[in-house]
Image (tube, each protein chain N blue to C red):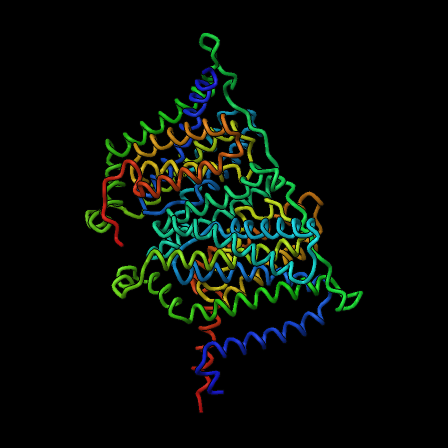
Length: 292
Length: 347
């Protein structure tokens, strides 16, 4: 029973990170109808920037800030320099270009930092606090929950309560009309990419210290899990992404706790297939007739 | 001559025969290392040709072909080792193992294809990406069979004695791999020119129209996946024979991305493009290796560059080709040919 409780809390903490990462995917999907397969590589690049800053200054928080700023910048550059020029009529082109970006990012990181696992520190202790002898949550887990909650609330406020959020929603929903009404649609798209990339960077900062360490491929499995989470939630719904993230995190935590951690990739595959075959639109999507 | 023009099958047979003779003469001239590289190109070609049919002609994106190659490679490895343990030897062992590899991979491809037929665009890409990550991990989970990260050695018989005592092993490998690649190309070339090939393209271009024309969508898509998987399985099996070992590291996600990249740069949907892509997969790492040798660097930097520079070049080429020249190398050649023909008026 203790183990179950521990795995539950561990799964929720992992799930919170997946939720943040899935949220980043959903942000870009809503803005541009693109699943950003380069999200993982972009986030790792931001985490490496944080690593450099932290090892130069010795401060975790400066590195944390650098990761967020780096994430914004990477998203901005990727959208302005690459994604803008991709042919949007074929769905293959966007995925293939994103995969090209993955290769470039991972190769550059490998060249500059090497392909070894680099240890990264945490701002808070990772030893679990106990309640009545049962280990529950570490201070770091609480920090993860807080950070993700803050991001979710901030994004919700941004999209529903601010003029910029309204413009972003409008240009995603009806680009032509928005342009006629004087909205800078291209700029909104860039902003969407930058925001999503920063959220992805935050997720990478939160998840990498709990895994093996910093590595150009550190986010590969996280990306697939987060994609699964986003699909569970329906790719289109931010609420779905959060719920999907938490549930995928829980399931993966139980699987790796009871069956062994090397089963996790297969569990992700099975879960993804199951969701797509049973409910392709995700659990939170409104029913839409498929264009055959 | 008119027979060749009228019969696709005869034309393709003649071309294959010609290519076979040219390649045979080439293997006699090349030094062992070049022969090994040629064999590697042939093994890659099986996989890229299969992938270009799936992605280019049927419009289904697969990021999991590296994993399908792993299925073929591990099947061939297990079959070769079991057969040699059981004392079965002779010329029929190798074709048997390869056929087994192809069959098992086809079964795996059918399973993925059944799911894929219900999925579109990014969803399909996501599922095949998960396949690419899950298959190498499966070798760790079932480590009694697959021996985890170390992988398995592959028992391969030496070249038959009838070829002479000092026959170079690399030339023998090149012959096996080239035979596999030529067979794949012949079958695929006929397939894409047939009714099935037209169906594949019809489904890619307009699903509604294809359906109205009486084409069964799901069946066509599964068929494309199975054919493509069979090619990847053969390519993986040949890889296992060439390396004489299999390990999950050789069939990582990067391999899947490489295959896709080769197909895109060669020219999506074109079998000749698949040849360019396979050549590039072998030639580019070699070129970057030569370049890093040429510049004097500290050993640590050289090691980092050697592993990663080809990746960066590949990725960058992929992006540039996709944005600037979606037809790839084959598309450029075709345009060049048209330009030349216009310049030189036919008399």
